[in-house]
Length: 343
Image 1 (tube, rainbow, N blue to C red):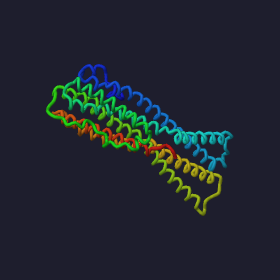
Image 2: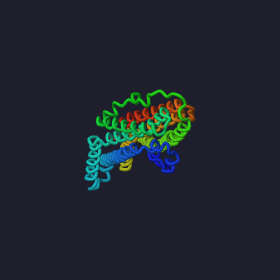
Image 3: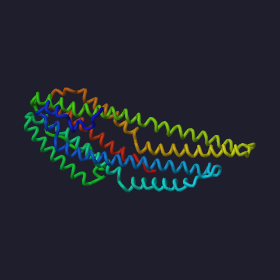
Image 4: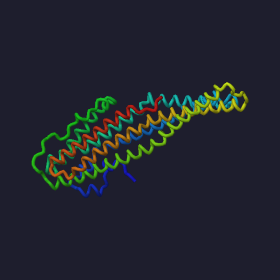
């Protein structure tokens, strides 16, 4: 079973095995700040998804009850509780939609997720300092200073709220711009490569591949359901039109009943297709699967260069990987902005 965020919170055994890189592997300031952002992101995402799905469920039930009222109720009658139930569902659905719009659930979720992923990047950006400073003690001090300044800069940036995401430009974030000279401490670099490979490249590769698969599998049923219900609704609507337009159409009770059922089925199927389509747009699983697959390939390309041979090669690989991570974060925010459960 996958343990999420094991790159941020590695095991004690792993940290002890690489004692010279204990700060880089664990980075307590990042772990603490990330924990707060991660909890906030998970909470707001759950609320956003729950309220969104509840609103769609209410809308769908209201559409079904309306279809019954317009087609079958004149023949079978409507229960006394149907109208109050439909009104209650309508109020609940409208209330949920208003919460989505004015409660800023998605914005809160995205801002917290943006902060968490930026913190994750800061942790691994610090690995560039290992290539620039061969002494483990000095590299750790530089990493501590870099981390504190980067967290403070990010906190200041996040004070802008949603604009922090809208104005985010991955190419403007420079990491370790000092030139890497010489061969440095090859043993230290080799250890850093192993830690970076295990915590960053391997974890991200596995995460992207797993999420791409899960997103495709989760989207399979809604996509099929939306298409099938729309096609069935269109077929039944055509059948109802053909039967209604026949000049020799009998006016028996059975014929009227059949037409009423056809009309009810048409309304219900089209309503189901529309609501499922909105659900797909809100979940945005297809775009997520495509994004995960694309960036997993990029990480695979970076991993093929390991071992990197020199400090400069290692620094280049870290910069490349962190640029990929920042680009993926930027694309995620743009994709999520377009995803909505609001009608």
